[in-house]
Image: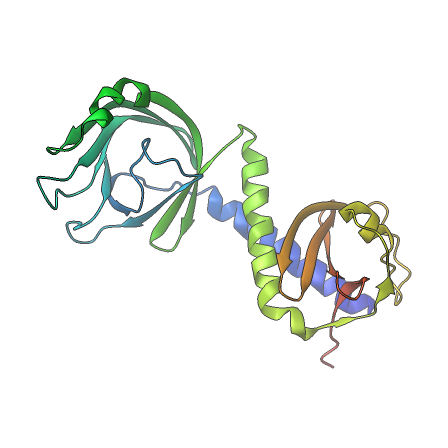
Length: 243
């Protein structure tokens, strides 16, 4: 079991290293992207962009080499109201950018009050973390702690990966009557190695149909803890010995 945990730590460390190395690569944001939401107009948490290989027939945004951008939607009917935004962007580092909307236009016969509210839509959108997923890019608001942005995306990837493989782990359950995350984890014992989890910090969690998953971290060592709220039980996820 010691050898299994050691190999697991090595794999997790390599995943951390590769993720940070990937995020350190410059993401080219220039060009035309398909977007579900109008940049700086739609009230959404983040923007999802897909690289356009052909002229877009839906909403799109173009990031120009001169640091400006324009975003809009096709006018399907002149009696409707189409929204267009434009502004500027600057790269903060390889995978962070700041955007500001400087102009909002409404085109159509029935835009009415939307035009009157145009001035209220001019604003600094702040800093976004540019997270690349294949041909797509997610623009995620950043609090300014760039390493934290990278860590959060790594944790998301780790829990997504665990969610696909959770049945391949072994579990040794402890009963718990705790309700708070930290208290639940305290009731979790490593029955196989008597590992002390008190130095591990919960860095990420996720709710799934089979239970709540907590990702624990101490330096570069990680563990998954699964909590079953129905059964009031908690366990470490143990990699199965395939030998």
